Length: 168
Ligand SMILES: *[C@@H]1O[C@H](CO)[C@@H](O)[C@H](O)[C@H]1NC(C)=O
View (cartoon, rainbow, N blue to C red):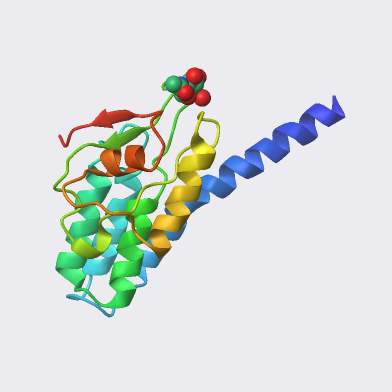
């Protein structure tokens, strides 16, 4: 009984740590308030949780990352924050889906500096170790992505256990 409670608490803590990333990304974008017009960074930051929802289209966060760069400019801090959004794990509801969705639109993201970045996926998904290692690598050194969608890049780098989703 006690062991079970501890286990549940530990699992909850892990889940919270992973989904804390949404708040972290929102805060990072919010922190770009010295770029763009007053209030623009805050408005864009407010849009980040919506594109990371489990039900959001997998391409939506890529379009938002492009919008962030378009609105706030291509300062290194802006690009790093937008890259984090591209590489973020979209929420995942294991009771409703067994594999993640990745964007199959090769035109997204349009920003050259944001291409070749693949996202984190839920660690419970078969193959997640490969993808999550690739995601970390790609934030440092983006993969080759000429003509490729995020889904194509993930596949080229050895992760195939996902559903490709077109831009809606
Ligand atoms: C994909 O991941 C799901 C969830 O972990 C697993 O049940 C399934 O067997 C995996 N499929 C492949 C082809 O690896």
